[in-house]
Length: 288
Image 1 (cartoon, rainbow, N blue to C red):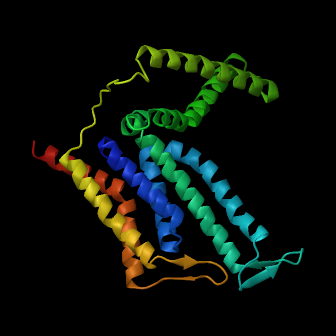
Image 2: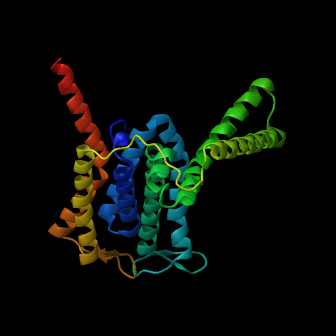
Image 3: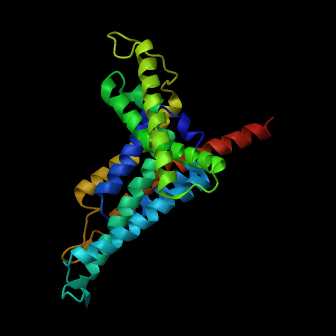
């Protein structure tokens, strides 16, 4: 995602907000399945195959757990499939609701994977630093906290295995956690000293940034706003309505298909933009 990551941070933020809000609050199956597909493709393009595979090791068990949990605790619906030993009914509606709840959860997690890869901490500080500096700093540090801790745990664990190949079990885990906590506390002190020396929090403090809004960013903004407005109007107008209980039913027809196509166009924007950049690069190379 070399091209998409070079767009203005506001355009990138708007894209992720739109796709995540639609994935969370629009329940129509066409939107949900398209959101999952493009969230996976975007995450794969952003982080690469190896990191994406590790992400799936977390996402897939969560999906299975969510999909299986709902029929066990919810027994609404009119289409009874069978009865549990407790006497409660397992309905088709509760099963499908659990499946799509799992899809929604996985979609949001995958969008956040791309978010962490594209919207780096300096972009978050650039977007919110002058408006809400404390929140922007907290948000940027919070988003990078878990990935950094996991990376440090792997580094320390591998180093300990090199020093003591037979080291394992609770003693090995305790040593790794102790080292990681100490490392994180030392890093926090260094960060605090660095912020103080740079004058963070002082009034009238200026900030330098390389980000400039260009005509290319304006084109990308229009590309996002048009299908985004179509999806919003369709959702408010009922063209993307869907319900699972008591009977699964929802909107269908040409307007539903067009609204879903608008969402697909919106969700595929990074991939379309990357394809356009690659095509322009090939044309420029062929002209040399």
